[in-house]
Amino acid sequence: MLVTNHVLSGAVIGAATRRPVSAFALGVVSHFVLDAVPHWGKWRAHDQFMRVAVVDGLTGLAVMGAMAAIAPGDTRVAVLAGMAGAALPDIGKPSVEFFGRSPFPRRVDEFHRRIQQEAPHRFPQEAATGVVLLAATITLLRARVRRR
Ligand SMILES: [Zn+2]
Image: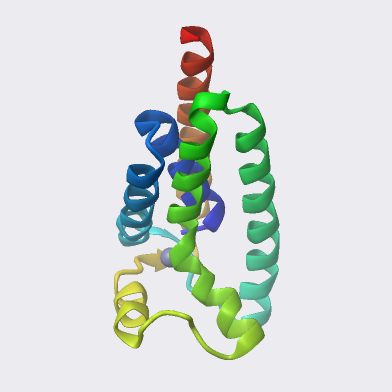
């Protein structure tokens, strides 16, 4: 799954729990759950993977910045922790690109690779997942602002 969608799911978790440690741990778990759901992927070539990965990585960072900016003060750390936990398992991909190795034990990488349910025709599902997660994040954060 795109890291942008993982970041958004982490923001939802952080906004819902408002507890940084729980948000981080649940964010990591959510990463593997979402990767096991059928999603867009299975690239034809490394160039195609890199084009998607660069745009996705930059979009994910922008989403992290935006969510940190709009989260109310009492929720911000949990939202950041949720997003960090949800994105963490994918740090292995840029690590392999730039440093030639993953920071995770081989068993973790094998598990991560084995659970993927990727297909190249699933961009609509991937985009719809992002829209739903963005709407959920904004709804939860607006509710937090109204309760203050
Ligand atoms: Zn992943």
